[in-house]
Length: 138
Image (cartoon, rainbow, N blue to C red; front, side, top):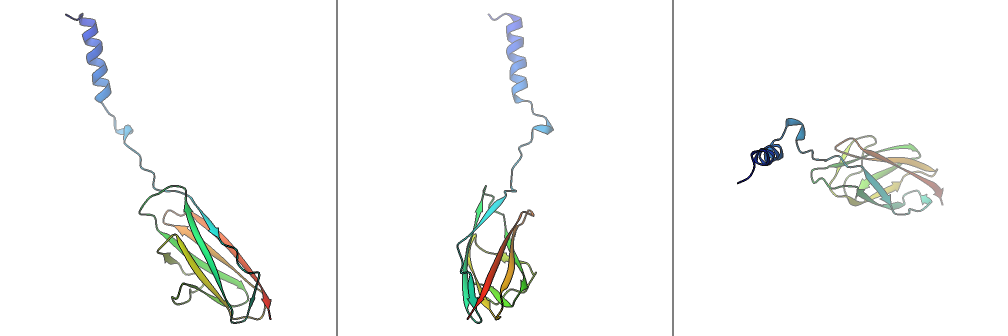
């Protein structure tokens, strides 16, 4: 038969293994920063010319309910930016991105240099800024 102190030690050890406090709740991380990769684009664009911009959002983690958004602001020249064949974006409005790999199309409507910024954000407030500048070509 086991000595009483050994039985007490086993009993107290098993109780401490099954007891949980409120502070021991499982934490689930859902806020993951991300990076944005952009394929090279031309340095020059002519009036009426369309430039394809290929963008990939690279997550550092994977939370399936993360949503991504895009907004842009043009501060030099004029042009339109659109997602595939959809209607052109309005500057500084927020648009939902359905995929993490996509193409934007910028069409110049200017004979001078053009500059604009694209901001990509997620549903947790993380943001990345991408700047584009095109010189005018004839």
